[in-house]
Image (tube, rainbow, N blue to C red):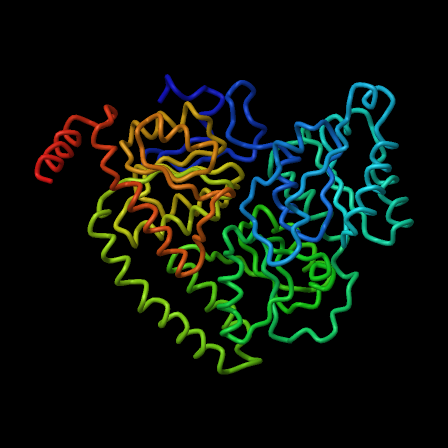
Length: 462
């Protein structure tokens, strides 16, 4: 460990059971460590990008726009404007003389061409340095065009990805309360922090429909500007991926008194628990909602559990490493892997808080390594040390797994398979099974001698 982890990083790595819990987090990434994190701008962009009928304009060099373009598998049931990437493409002369004129001209042209419901304008590092007054430009264009033009103050050098979530929430909050909330059911929710990857929001909305609960706004997967404008009329906010939209939930609670609950739609236990939480909240308005929810969960599990039991026969005892964006996701995944008989031995996140890591330590097995803001060298070392069978991460982690001869499961923004809900748990289990059980891993030299001999024997016996 001492040879792999830099001294400045040791306080952000904890081994459960070997020392008292102490975990530093939410620090600036260490220069030279090649962090897996993204910048403030990226954090804001990934939150707002799935709002499908809004214009998204990056005020900065073209590289910033290409870095964050289409990085979520966020599907829209209607408009596709979010799939286009627009940039002011600042050049050297713009940096010297300022980019405000270029920004204003770009906004007016794009709004005229695409007629969006709103426009989000993202500030990048160079814009923060040269001091363009984005607020003034956005006000002028909004006054002339009659649509909200919202500056997102997301200069990358301000901090890490988590600060970008806050910038996105502040921009969205300008929309909240500007629409007519009449006619909204007293049994209504907003879905916060779900990005409709591979259509997952639609799965969750269908569960709520069967329970008799109206969904006012998806924030932000398959999102619509008009829904966000009236979302203050919902009775409850459901916050998944707490790092991304928790600030918006807190702002709405302070301004409109809207309560919120943290939920997760991943895995068997957390999906069911989230539905039961909603049923409990609305039980006084509809006494039958609890019975509907119990029946819904029973029906889904009666189909799911036999399938999981079949896959578990092969997966029992296998070891998992995972590195995710928001730590809240890791809680659900640990429970999901236990349903498959698998053990998580390494778990880390980009944006976890001390509270999150304490909770992770409480539900993880002794010896598990918890890491905040890891770099590739650390992740590779932990994978080899624990001799894991599968690594769960995102696009930046995939090469680490394959270079080490480890199965990989994409559980991040780019995936095209729905992993939420009860049907998503089965999709997840099948993907883990196909990756772990692939015969190619028998021939990888990284395997320990004992396990390599066992794999060879299995191969001979067919």
